[in-house]
Amino acid sequence: MVKAKYTRLRSSSGKLSRSAVGRVKDSAEYYAHRPNAEGQRAYRAGFNGSQDELTKYEVAQIIEREGEKWDLAYRMVLSPGEEMGKEDIREWTKDVMKRMGFQDHRYVAFAHAGEDRHTDNAHVHVIAFTDEKLGREQLRYMREVGDFEADSALRKALMHELKHRMERTHDQGMDIKTTNDSTDATEGGGASRARKRNQQMDMDF
Image 1 (cartoon, rainbow, N blue to C red):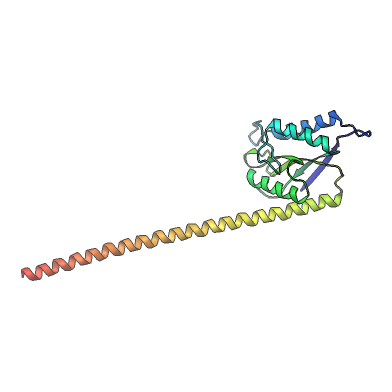
Image 2 (cartoon, rainbow, N blue to C red; image 1 turned 180 degrees about the vertical axis):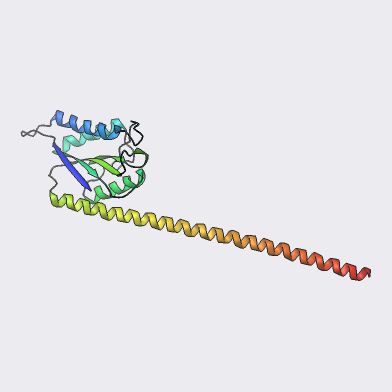
């Protein structure tokens, strides 16, 4: 799922609008401090293509700096359509944005997933900077990329779980074999001692 709105950062004369930049910062503040599922309001670290965690100050710096370079600031909501933890949805977002040409500091994002979610639908709020409007075809393509990356992430997770189960089964098999070997050795030792006792009894007789 992709939802998108944009804010013009410049006036018709091309001059940067400080009020527009301020509105973008306000959006970032809202995304960062949205209450979680328990209703607790705490700062969610932002992230982008270069950093996994951005402080409030770093987010504001990026918005100021990118606002000087680009004409539009898009506010987007991206959802993989399935449950993801905070780390997984962060990597998914990076993959989607990179495929769309938004890399490094051209966006800031906030994951509302895992312990930071406030709905049952894991999603990410993204503020991305560009000079061109994103048309329907581009947004449709972004949805397709998101679905593809979500499927890829799901496949990776399933492969990881399968590998973990196989390793666990192998370890359990080794434990059983070791136990059997120990039992056999114990039984063998007991038989040997029994034979010695019998031999001693024959000699005494």
